[in-house]
Amino acid sequence: MIQNFLKEPLPDLSVSRTSFKWGIPVNFNKKHVIYVWVDALSNYITGLGYHPDEPLIEQFKKYWPADVHLIGKDILRFHTIYWPIILMALGVELPKKVFGHPWILVNKGKMSKSVGNTMYTDDLVKYFGVDTVRYYVLHEIPFAQDGNITYELMIERNNSDLANTIGNLVNRTIGMAKKYREGIIKKVEMEEPFEYNLKDKALETLPKMEAYMDELKVADALEEVVVLARAANKYIDLAAPWALFKDPEKQDVLDYVLYQLLETIRYVGVLLEPFIPETSSKILDLIKVKENSFESLNTFGYIEKSLLETSEVLFERYDMQKKLEEILKDQDE
Image (cartoon, rainbow, N blue to C red; front, side, top):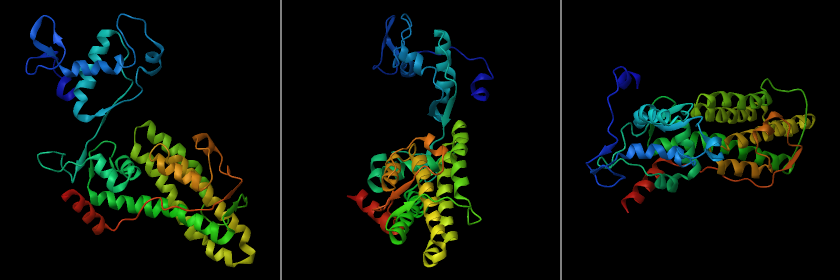
């Protein structure tokens, strides 16, 4: 904005137009109506009850100024030049921070109806489900550059992160609990028997995520949850519960391993709640946990005992070719 607009003196801006008829009429010239962007910008504060000639109401005091004003990068000029000028003229505080979000490109090109590459949210949800779509756009759109979306990339990310990592962790753990302990996982404390500490990894995840979120790096924050789930899957391979089960002298270690996995899954479930809430709720239901606050993550060892009765496929793993053919057929109908 500084380079493109503020290096030179700003010229006057006309707040009315004659090129269209809809809009608020200008009372001193019937040919003019108020330019939509001037009217639209005021909605941020009038929607909170602001009136220039009346006392500020509590709702306005509570929510304004915005801590973060999140917008698309193509409307930065309106929100970092016009809008602050209007607010300053009114004597109203400016937003504390304006974040111009990058674009979502389709196959590395801008969406366009004329080109025919537009992807609609309703269609994506129909093909993949709400949480897979939420996960993709939150995880795959970088902080400071445009993101890319294709059906192939959606399928790949669903399979690798959601089905093979998070879903697999939950299903493996519940399956082992039922096979080795009739679904009962009890709290066991001992010196970590393996050179891999899940407790430490779980406890450090939320602070890392909070640091990223403070910088508005949502994708990096979400990746930390996936990193934790990957660590838990690695812990299963390292601890080999199937081998522990066969060793009469390692039954306490098996109980310990299953509990470490259960608690880590609780962390994954709670941490996913702001990003993919339906999946978060399903995970916590499966492990019989009702508390989903971040405060509950201050303690690794929150669960005393749990009976894991049923599992659920959280995310379907798609065959790339079959899924693409299914989508293509649907779009042709």
